[in-house]
Image (tube, rainbow, N blue to C red; front, side, top):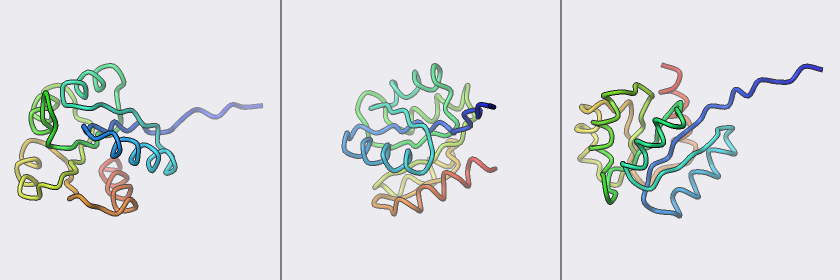
Length: 123
């Protein structure tokens, strides 16, 4: 009997709000992804180095290190696709300029987020 190779893509979700981490974690697992989480940019960078995610969902407003600073540092060593999700729509151009692959404004429909993740990972 052959064993299937685990081909699940790993998503890192970085946000300081536990309820959002929990919601996105459940939603993404139901969509077939492995999910790891971090609560600020500094922790997110450590998770990228140790867990090697296939895609990163990144909030902007967080304590310790915000999402834009994390993105800037991330791009010095990692090219994994990054989707920024934030209530601050005016930061979308800056985030794309720093190397984000996509931006989605909060609140968003869960299926739209999954579609965007699928799209950036297919590029």
